[in-house]
Length: 396
Image (tube, rainbow, N blue to C red; front, side, top):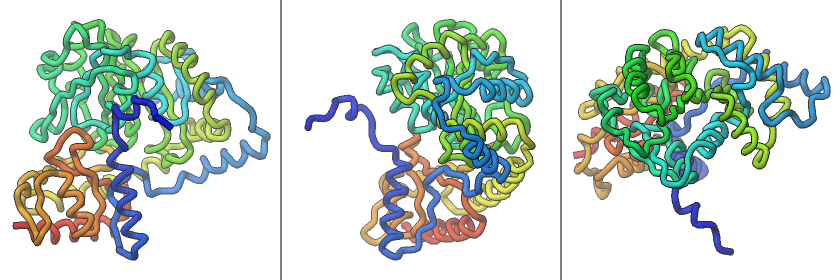
């Protein structure tokens, strides 16, 4: 059987690969602290779980409209107004099987072969893979730790060409935890205003996990709203990764296009999840705030602890649940037969020597760093940092 050539345009996500390697070592009896996957370690709040059980008992088991159930679309519209002061009609909102699915819909409906798509790095690994599946041309813009891994208006202006069709970014960011302020977004908006051919995908899946204040969306700038695609979902803020529910708010014509596309792939999202999502979005956010409090405690500890390790540079993430330290000062060093030439070597060294599973930064567009997920217990984080520090101290 001969497979399609398109599979050669992208690789398996390093996040998945490192999780697999960690599980293999665990199966051999080795105690691994897994910091590879970005998945909340909390249980979905009880009131949301109960809403799903109620939906089953009430007989919700049939197909839904492809774009989502009308009352869920209304709930999302209310949420966007309540939390973000954004006005979206239900005809400008669509539900999909996870935020990743929403991204795929938008990218496949916007990008033609050869279209240029700007992605500031570090970035979430799926962005470039989906652009490549759409046969677009990815243009990466390097954003270093000195700017908290955020693109500047000057960098954006210099990157845009007449062939630029789309810009994709996230705030709070996976993998860096960087959060764009309103002022920073306003600076980018001024650049976009000069280039009306460029659409903007704003991935806001980590919206609630924000340690520096209220979330700011680039969709708030009225001159851009008809070009912005807001992507969000329930996985991170409500600890609902396995429930698979994402949504998009965008101009009506794009929603109609994505409706047409999704109808040929999955049709509507799971009806039980949709009923639970209504409860999640319209109920008390107290459980979410409790999770964020725990995430901040973990962030505070890991950021400080990493910065104390000689040779490690780390920013202080403003949101999400990751650390993205620069470990390039260890390149060229070795321990025994293990040579550290790059970030991949470092991730493998920490896995095999320190028994901590991380992800190489090159998977996210920065080969000087590694990513650590802090979505685990404080006990695991204490142990992971101790192991990482000890492993790094062996290198010379």
